[in-house]
Length: 208
Image (cartoon, rainbow, N blue to C red; front, side, top):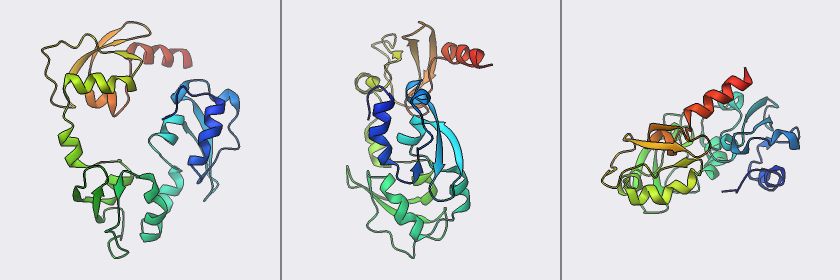
């Protein structure tokens, strides 16, 4: 993952998304880190939309118009599967893919687990290996390791006796920037990438 986002960083990484034309992106667009909003042009249909750097390079989202227009078939699957380098699709054949709800055999490259899953869960919701997700249950040790992904949040208020077992478990968070303290679910912090509610309210107020 890239360090702090800036224009040179963006220029180095834009080749990761060959289906998107970034010719309209200027240096002044990269002004809010991963939340910077940039104009994107779809190579396939020429649609123009605006989204965040995080959405393009982390969530790997694509053109919303083309995604609705292009139906899922084996040809599209072959084009899209590079987006999931963590998964092995060697057991998927052309007979398996009829639409976005088609069930396919998927193999985890990390643990070798094989499971059947709907196509849209893999490429739209970005579901991963259920075995790895179960094995990597949350604990204070895992929180300490994963916390580097959220340098904007101080997790020191999570008590030592607090055993964390579920991504839906609320924990105490403190904003590094404004020192606001709030409770949030692990799922919201590390999967939905939600941040300090006070900072979000302030940003929304400045925009309006």
